[in-house]
Image (tube, rainbow, N blue to C red; front, side, top):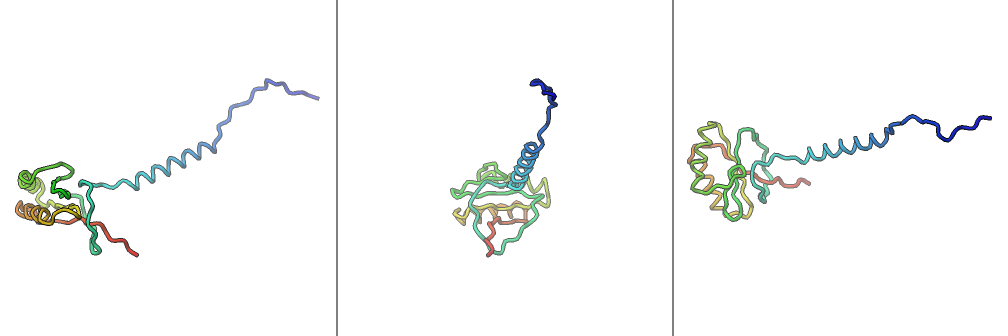
Length: 138
């Protein structure tokens, strides 16, 4: 009868099951993070709801945000109402087919939004979209 020695050498093994668990966790995390990434060009505001809203192409567009307190932001950069006309004219000269999306807070003063839309039209940009939050479908 042969008695094994206590100091026998074993080969190291790589356990594959914990490795698979880690890979699936990383994959699930990557998928969840990539799905939650939304290109938001404007400043975060409470958008008004609209049932008849239509998704539009945003490749050559700028976002003009009107906050509740009347502050203006052009693509996340705060500007004054005096700077707005010059900045819009520069956008029009840079891209003749420029489209502007007005991103207004639902509690913003309606007159501020109309004044912004008038300045957009006066600068020669005639493609204006109003961002809304889609209604929940039942």
